[in-house]
Image (cartoon, rainbow, N blue to C red; front, side, top):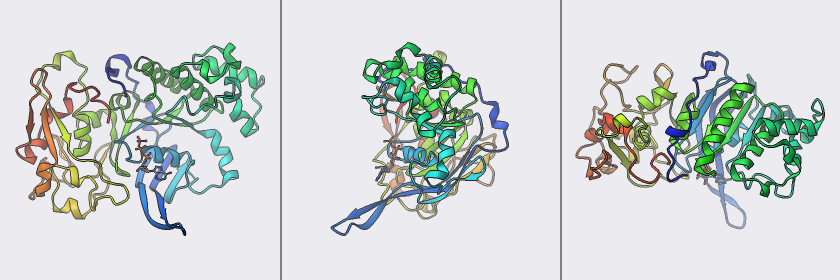
Length: 414
Ligand SMILES: Nc1ncnc2c1ncn2[C@@H]1O[C@H](COP(=O)(O)OP(=O)(O)OP(=O)(O)O)[C@@H](O)[C@H]1O
């Protein structure tokens, strides 16, 4: 996304939602799977499948913001489209307010379309350039056959005002607006039917840095005002940190870690999360001089067509042992409000993990290739020397690594 962005400075933190104490989830996802078939030849025979989402479980509580983060291609958008039922799941279950909506048909989905809305990444492509703002924002009323109190025009103008646009611009076309204003139009359209759940797929990544904070703040205000529940998908770790109450980290179609925001950022347990966070800039100027290392993962993300056996991250993990190669780790609650899928999760010495060894290093010998899987970069300002990890334990044991400073152009994006 941005080169110069420092959202730590520009986007105020959200208050932690009181919703986290709510017992009944708004959305519950169990074993959700989406495989896109790969077909070849004249007969279009299926030769394989892209395992975009491959068995994920999570809940979204009323009033909260669940952030979903992960590298490009890990299945975030597919997950968003599955829970809004824009895509048909291959397997698993989606429940909204306790009702199974996994395979609802068009008529069954009609009432749900009011309750669940999506905001898309591209404010340029997602608005029809030939329609006026008025007709774009009023489309949901027409589709649902809803007549708002006071009439459609009045309601659309109210919505435009709500998202900070001039209600008088009802008759203008999308090209007459800036990127941030177009995203506001998309938000107004999403809110038209007073949804309960809004899924936002990279809502600010197409916007200028200066506008990102405004849109994030708008979404925050609207959440407070309208009691919205958000699932926000983003690859920018700083944005995710600021908007989320809880965060799910995805890797190759799986959730590898799911935790309260502070727990995740302060003590990530999955080596992948730890590597991602080691690149997040530190906003506190008092700590800018502090020693910090950044874990650089080597190699590309494997193909979701044939993901690695066992733990999918084992081919890039410096702690991988034989068990990681052969057994897929389940997503387990190892601390209150903190789930992780890892055979050798990170720990903090004074907080013992439930059911696993408290040490950070794996008990058995790491795989030979694991030694080559990362580089540890000294990210302390004025000493940018790159040093190869002498041992995997050394790389993994770096507690400072989640506190790296800005070194490259865009360290908070993945
Ligand atoms: N309609 C489709 N047909 C086939 N493969 C698809 C389709 N949609 C997505 N995929 C594949 O599924 C995988 C996950 O894609 P997805 O867009 O969900 O990832 P993502 O994490 O949102 O990535 P990005 O941030 O780049 O959008 C990718 O390998 C992608 O190529």
